[in-house]
Length: 405
Image 1 (cartoon, one colour):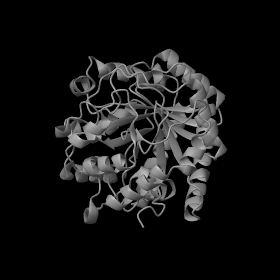
Image 2: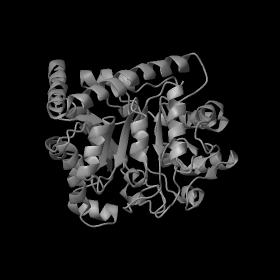
Image 3: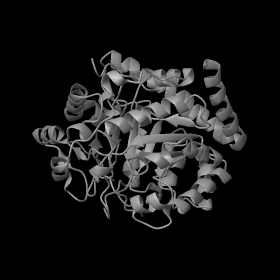
């Protein structure tokens, strides 16, 4: 069975190599593959020795601006907060000084952020994952991304035609997103498709048909998230229940045996034990206000970068708030405290004097009103990886780092 597992990934690799220009493949292999693996190892060693903290990689939301109005989104609709180009450049430079060269770039919609590609070009030694709804990802944008060579678009598809329009609050979203996907394939980009799974899109997207559809469109990877009912329009009734979360995990584990795309999640380790990237310190977030945040949906903070952004390294190392939050979340659950116990989280944030980092300034009220929903910790029902290559990848790219004792 292990041979079958490796054969599947070999076929994916051959397909991606066949459709991707050599310069893009080289940049991916060096900037993302080798550098990222080396830094993850360094992070593990640094954590084991108790040295000053710095996350394995940093996610950056560059703007609150977005052309869609999705339910369950934590970003403030109509919000105007944005990092300056100087701050974004400084944050990246500061992270590079710590040895970190991989960044997730989010919004809002990051393609609405002016000057973004200039920053990508300046930091050609880095690799960027661009989280986008792709409705603005034209043929010209795809050509620019090909010329840059150091960006992988991660394109959000929240359902097929009807569900996309309902969830996104706009018309013809699916077709417009599909046009962006096809522009990426036309230019030979290495790109992925993402989905935030809720009750309303579960049957459409947690399916072999969807995997095959994504592969046919040329995606290299498919990233599954679990819907988090947050923001001004949270829709908690759409959150998955425990049975559905278990079904999602079972689906991922089984489909990884022979799926024609790489299937990604950041919820479970190789043994199927639940993990929180924030609790492990693997990943933290800088918001569009310049706030140091635990993760993108947790929009409360105690520290902000300065006008240059270059102090982000020292802030991560010195933040007692972030350190306390990592300890508290690890002690409370291996799942997601924002979903499982939002009121306890709100009390912790109030005790530490954390402030709302958004334009809407209603986050604490939202947390106090949130109902608890199921998280991804399945306890004794944990489902280990069945695919040998995925077990290896989970061990080497997704450690526990001793966060849970």
